[in-house]
Length: 323
Image (cartoon, rainbow, N blue to C red):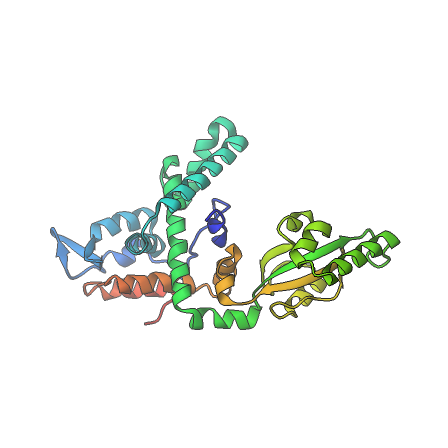
């Protein structure tokens, strides 16, 4: 769970979970949309899970920010809140990330950290520094919504990405060299020792832990985790890693850092979904997954626009969805 927020780049506060998809609709363009059902004398924009969202609620939002983007944000929030059950673990994770952000801002801005934090939160639709935990929790809930959509729509959302980008999990062993084109006798001896250890039957992870000069991955048994064709590895390493099938090991590969042995640990969907970067790369490749997940969940909740077809059209256009 600690790595969950990394899936959509939310280790940086100013990142946004769902990017805007189309153009601008101002208050004047939307103020005449709502015609239909009323609740307590107010026009109803739409109903989610039998809960009415009234025109006045939307007018306040639209008038302040003048855009369908903000209306969509509120629509999205209503869908996510009704679709995702918040767990104690999610709350604890949100609190942890919020505390880390606050600590970072305190270190950077000192006594003015709260004002700086509020500036960013306001750009994300939140008003007070105390809303930081809510922002983090909302992000976790959105992640969960997207994860569930991907898992239940594997064939349509994952297969094209897998064919184009060859996602996988890899590990490596690095023998670092000052001049990879001219290895020293000592460097060659270390490569020989790695080969001998593997030939003796030691696992790749054991040998990586013992011999690899990439200390960051060595403590993880050589694991570099998730990667795909867009991962920023040096070209020779990237090409060699992508050429492997699951369970295969490469020959020694030269790079600017030295020589590497690479093993492909996994390429199956179930394993890939356990890695933080998988959803980032998948939704980058297919950004429409995000609004599609929201729309699918809204329909499952019994979304009803109550004859507000113009608003429905504006919303669908903004989301990039064609029914």
